[in-house]
Length: 113
Image (cartoon, rainbow, N blue to C red):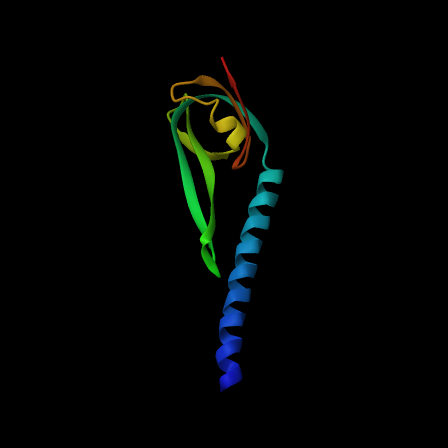
């Protein structure tokens, strides 16, 4: 019984880890199979999602990481939110118009016109 108490959480952690890994690899594969598209778009929104990580042994040691997202609107009125690298995020301003290049859910480039 005692061994089972430790086996179940380990098994649950392993299953969750494998499911997340399969989802990430699946999205990566789907993006690779998608066509590379370049379309006219407008930057309509920007946001960052910050997560804080603490060292389990010492709460004074922590760090943060931010993931950046930009929402683009196409001439048809459809919108698409993409994860954008931090070195591109600062260059994009709401209202910018240009050519958005993406592949599936992967941001590749935005050229202002």
